[in-house]
Every structure is written in structure tokens, then in C-alpha cells.
Length: 150
Image 1 (cartoon, rainbow, N blue to C red):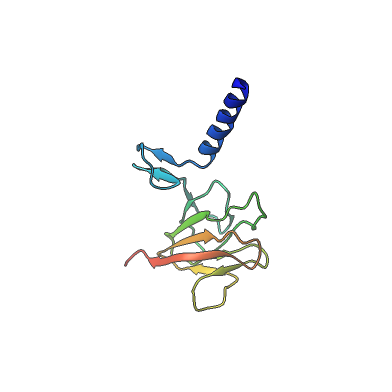
Image 2 (tube, rainbow, N blue to C red):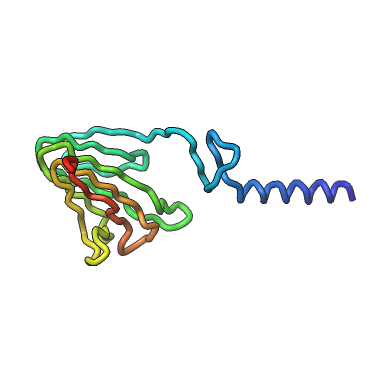
């Protein structure tokens, strides 16, 4: 009987850990992940006119001397989906950076327009692209496109 109680207690403790929240610099996290402090993401500067985003990328700063086309990764089916992945793209060049989803996938750049095959990030602009978690159709959304001068 004692072994059954210990086993049940162990199983219940595992379930409580699975559904718990993670807090960094806090003992009482208010969200699934609650960070009370700064955090770091990768920064990469590139002059490549052709580039494929990597799973390790997050912030990319284009400094090339010609127009560029950068390709987003192909959507993948669950459980390896990367829904919510964010890429920030700063265009510090004098040329456009065209951002394209993979194959027939689309990027939603406006809530009133049909999803498009690409997003143009003009010279001096900053864009934020987020993955929708979908595996076909509109797989990316442009959540911000703004001038560095505004």
C-alpha cells in the first residue's frame, strides 16, 4: 500500500511540473514564461544578396550593396512546427530586401489584402515577420514594417 501511495504521489508531481510556469528572476511567474530582466537573441549582419533564414537566426541586419532576396524556411508539420517564431530584419542598406516564404506559402502583410508571395523591406526600414504555425497557405505574417526615420 505504501508503494502505491508513493507511486501515485510521484505521478501527480510529474503532472504538476508539466503544467507549471517558468520564472526567471521571479518566484511567482504570471505567464508560461515570465522573465524579469533582460534577455539576448542572436544578431547577425549580412551583405548576402541571397540568404535562407536559419533556425538560429532572430535579428538580421542587411548591409549589402545591391537588392537582396531572403527566403523564409518551409513550414513543417507538428510536432516540429515553429509557430510563433519571429525574425526581425533591419535594412541598413540603400537597396530593397525582398522576403519570400517557401514555395507556394504566403505572407500576410495586411488584414485587408490577400496574402502575398513576398514582402519588400525598403532601404532604411525594419520588419518583423512571425510564423503562424500553419503548414500551408499563409504561413507567415508581417507584424511590423516601419521606417528607421520615424
